Image (cartoon, rainbow, N blue to C red; front, side, top):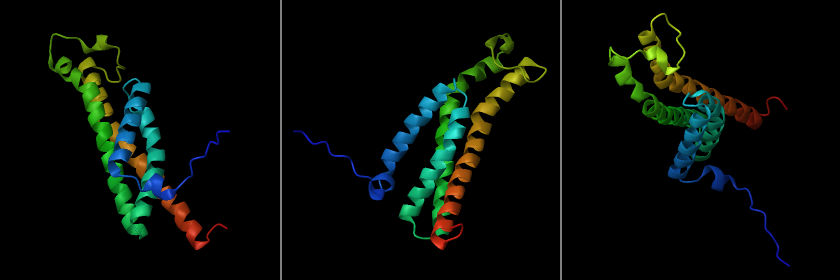
Length: 161
């Protein structure tokens, strides 16, 4: 008879993995979520909350003090946002020549025309996708990681039990 063994959970295996493995896994998930959002970073922003949890737990695993772990989690948040920013720039940078060409009407691209002029709407859309989306993702990742720190410090000190 064949006995299947269950893989055992280990904090060291989960949070102590090499940084390159975590970075590659995050990059692939971020790419898939950007594709799921049809090129918009909305799902990447929501994913930032879970990434914040993972970053906080990973930083807590490597750094013994809470202040040092918070600094490391903030650094992780900026790195993950940079990945999203590069991905959004790769997706939306192809529209910059259309924006600069006076003969092309950007209104026929199918993008939302939030402003009164089609060129300004396209410029606003590019800024929204490339700069504002990753900035909001930093906020969501920091929120998730600091909420995790709040719960973990409360568990350690006995607050809320």
